[in-house]
Length: 310
Image (cartoon, rainbow, N blue to C red; front, side, top):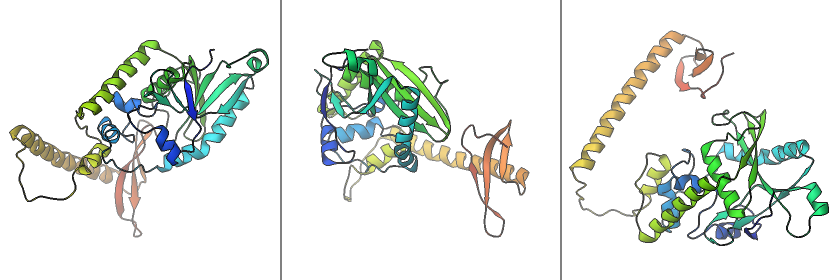
């Protein structure tokens, strides 16, 4: 282990003006780097949204989901479990850091770890590793066997950014999956990955300075961000060109065709289900049938991927 070389900016309460200030301006944080390289999951801000945020333009307000709320509530329990299994490590809260040389590179790890033996024998800055706490309420997609380094790719980006920012070599990741499956991982610093992430971040920040916005993707948050960029309405017309017009018409036709196909298949499933609650296949639940007060079908909804049939 080695001691952190990053600079601790302070410990700030999430959501406070001080917290926002530590993450404001032309900087990239560990939770933003996955969006920069196009690996953010659907519920996270896209590169398009992040670009507008860094440019000081309107973006949709952050609205924490129930999964995020319960992740925060469960974090102390997961930390305690990790501490119970690793009495040789001192688990401490930490704050927001920046790289010693690259002021725009920021990270706020969940915890910082010191070996108990080092407290007795080490003078000066203490060697450290990091601890990230995660919850995965809907299953273990992307999580490998406990003890490996197989974590979802967007989390790997986050961890590599944290390690690179603080100048550390390893991060433990503790995750609670589906409320009962506890696993731990050890992700080591990868210099090649860190260089790729830094290069992408520098190019992204340069694109903000140049005013060159990335192309929109198909996420809901990108669409919501685009809607916020114009206020008011002029009685004018804008020629979007035949290529974009044809793509829009084709997308509408495809959407209508997919809606028709979805309804056709759903009707076939309901016809097979009768009064059953779940539709299953190969030992997994595929869809759930909800009913109205009179017992007739209200809707057919997809089940979570990997949900097992009883």
